Image: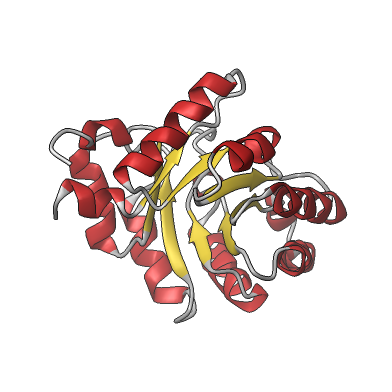
Length: 215
């Protein structure tokens, strides 16, 4: 797998709480130059990035990073992001509700967010480090039922990030139309290639620069 091929699956990411516009603009410029799948940036910078980079594929995050906002708030946040120019939405589920056995709330919020971005790519972050295997399997079913495009492992803000064994588990239990995004702790070329070979379609990371040489 060439560096360019890997980059075509990368969501080039900057989500640090203290990220300045200069940092966001830099990864947007790099994404255009090296043809990454998208940039993933904070919602507050989506409109500015869209104006500065009209051809760029822009992803942003919803309910980030803890996920315990109400469903209506997540839907409103999604609607605003789409109006500002986002092409892709990465939403965090309400892990608290899931852990409490309230899968209906989790499904409802997914459906509300899906309805708020019907033409956008929707990725659902389940924060695997907080879940049991049975809860991960349940999430696969809920993500599929809600009509999301991707299931995503992690925010990168949890106690652990993407794990290859979770990708194998997802592949067994997600619907045929659902893809996989791995994120969190992926910092080397070897890790990126391993996750793609395991069945991921997207990699979310801030380490894409290691692939720029020779592209």
